[in-house]
Figure (cartoon, rainbow, N blue to C red):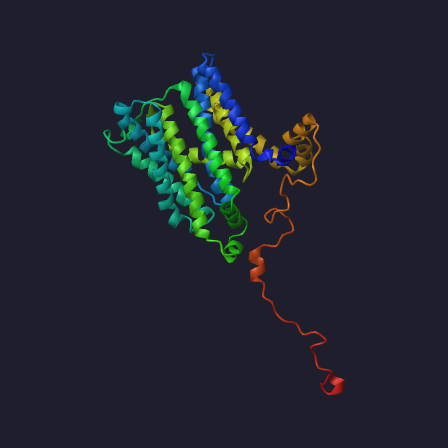
Length: 384
């Protein structure tokens, strides 16, 4: 039993434990009549939605290595279609749990279908071209819902949706965060996840190894779109009205900032960055009101620049290595690092600074050279 606990990889489950404990604490406070203000409950809902969006986008950007700027578009699809289903079911089912579950399934699945439809042609592109196509998809979706009739999706005024009880919605939202982590982390650690990261590291080498590149790109894109639709349905249940203006390209870039700020390919980093940015935006909007509201974006950008510089400046590398959370936890617990256990993988093919790109290896022209041993011996008449 002790050996199992010693060999248990706590770092694989630390995010589940922390989120589960925080959810349980806030749930007990809320359900037992404790003091949680409406603004606090709404902030918890927004943090949960942001975490789902950041973790799902990290699958495409961080682990697949493709730049997608259409995540707000998939969220928009889930918000409008899931919100429409919840509005239609409100008369018969009310705005309870059953309505929420059905709306989540409908919104997530339709967003996943949109991910397949967009992903099949778009994932043939790479880099800036893929970013432009996905960005165009988000803007097209926003414009389509904005120009619908008032009877269908509310048009420019937005779609009216039933508001879920604030005391319970954040609990369901964080349970969906745990579901998102379970699906995406298990996918990444499976053979399918290794194929996805192999495509990120070098697509040519992955294709040469027999990996179906199109299949795994589409898988990552579809799973990411599904959870973006789930986040959209939660958004519709946390607001009385869904307006398409919310899902513009600025929101897609904000989700991308959460992923980049947390570290490419870092699930825990994406969670922390999503919570931090959501909290920062909410507090700045609360503090900077009236004439000071114009300074909100300025301070937001300034704080992000400081954080990015701190995380990436070479001059601060020794400081970051010496004073980080992992070192602090080791000092508090008094645990020594076990050399037999690998806690990171800094020798990965994609991070070794002396590696040679597979493209360069395949493009080298191998020409035979005549050596002294290959030349005939003139003194013996050309005979050896």
